[in-house]
Every structure is written in C-alpha cells, then in structure tokens.
Amino acid sequence: MPVSSRIKDTTLASTFTPTRHKTPHPSIEPTTHKLSTPLTICIVGASRGIGASIAYAYAQAGAATLVLVARSSSPGLAAVEQRVKALNPTVRTVLIHCDITSSSSVASLADKIQTDIGKLDIVVLNSGYSGPVVLKVEDGDPADFQDVFNVNVQGTYLIAHYFIPLLKASGGMKTFIAVGSFAACIVDGHIANTAYCVSKFAQTRLVEFISEQHGAEGVLAVAVHPGAVLTEMADQTTPESFRPYLTDAPGLCGAFLVWLCQEKRMWLNGRLVSATWDVDELVERKGDIEEQDLLKWGFRVGQSSMK
Image (cartoon, rainbow, N blue to C red; front, side):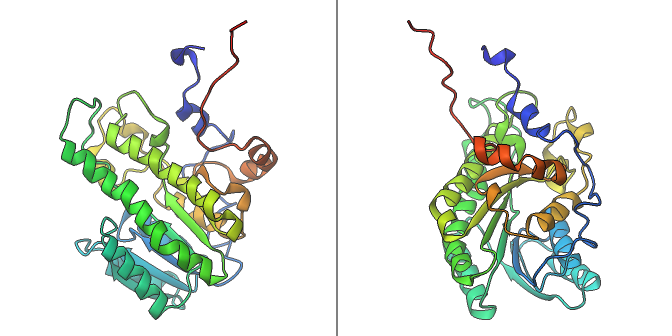
C-alpha cells in the first residue's frame, strides 16, 4: 500500500476510542474520583500550563505530597503552590528548581527527594520544548535542533536514570509518566516540526525501553498525549493554520493522570495514550491492547509478493 493511501498514524491515534473529550468528564473528574491511597508525586515542569493543571488535579484527588519542580527561571511555582494549598489544605508541598538537561541538577533533585521525603510513588515529566517550527532538515539552525533534543530526549533519559531507582525502592505505585505528544506520529504537513516530532518519537520509545527493562520489577511507564492545548509555548510557536485546533482544556491531562494513577494499570505499560480518549472505552479495549500489543511503535513488513 503506498504511503499516501495508508491511514495516517495521527488519525489512528486520535480516533482510538470512538468518543473523544476536550475537557475533564465525569469518568475522570478529580474532585469525585479520588486517589485510592495517599501518594507522593513529583511533577517536573509544574510552574504553568499543563504542568500546573496536573498539580491541581492531583491536589483535588487527595495526593499526600506534591513535589513541584521547575527551572530556576520559571517564576510561577510559588503561585501554583498557593493554589494547590487552596484546593487541598492538607497536601504537603515541596518546591525545587532543576534543569533537566543537566545530569548534576537532576541527580541533586533525586537526592533531595530521597533525603527530605524518603519515598516517591509517581514522577510526572511534563517539561518539553518545541523550538522554532522547521519543516525541512536543510532549514533552521542546528543549535535549535540540539536544544529540543536536550530537553525532550536527554531530559527524559536523565529523569529516568535518576528516578527509576527511587521508584523501585519505594514499594509503592512505581509509576513513570512522560507527557508526550501525538507529534511523535507526524512526518509531514504544516506542523511537522522536525526536531519536535522526532524528539517526541524518541521520548515515547524511551518509555517503551523503561517498561521492557523494569516492568518485571513493577515499574509502570506511560507516555500521555495531553491534547491540543494552547499553552504559552504553543502560543509562541504554532503556525496560524493550526491554531484553531488548539481547543483542549489544560486541565484535561491532569484529570486523565489522576484516573491513570487510581490503580496500577500495568496493561498500559510502555504505551502512548491520549488524555482525549474516553477512559471507559479505553478499558473496553484492554484485551485488544494486550493481545495485539497496541499503542507502541512497530515496523511494517507486510506480506511478500515474491514467489
């Protein structure tokens, strides 16, 4: 089948459940679907937008401790903490600055959590960088390409490298979540930003590696597409042709993550899922997902025509 006539991966991804959502819906509303146990959760990239909304959702759902992490240059972390406390006065909050592109900075973050808190159930890596939209490899500045990979790929690796031992030692949920993107599915079109799309593909592949290497030890690793959200970064970089599609609520991803963490859903280990999907319909497809090993990257070889 020619590539041009094959259904695009982005279409297959976005339509995996017949019903899609743009805002938190009753099945994942964090105020009514509480976490089953008090959890300690670290959110990396929590100072604004989707990351801040993830913190609010976990606070509403009854998290015990929230470690809110952002770069030292991010000014909004204290304001996020203030709202978290307003939503849940009993939650313990810890604010830490970290540069996820620096091995020593991430190592220091992990050490501080281990020393000051002693236990970590879930790490959510929300930090990401799109860079300028460059549609051809011959265009743009190679330094921008490197910057995108430093955050989205090297940053994911470093968080995994230093945090997987923490998760394994906790005896708790042992959950590693990367806020990924269906950009990983894109190879052409007006938003096929080469650096961002390839880096998000690599990030989700790293999630698969984590699941394969540590799944037997009880580690759950999932990449979650947050929806098409008009974040501050998207507002700065998205072409005008795509802006009308950025209509999903920032809080959708956080509500979905609360649902994801209400129980240990190992059947989603190593997979790329979407916060826009209907969770009840997703659960109905659990058998298909496990039997066919869906929602992971593959290599098509087809049937040979050789006689």
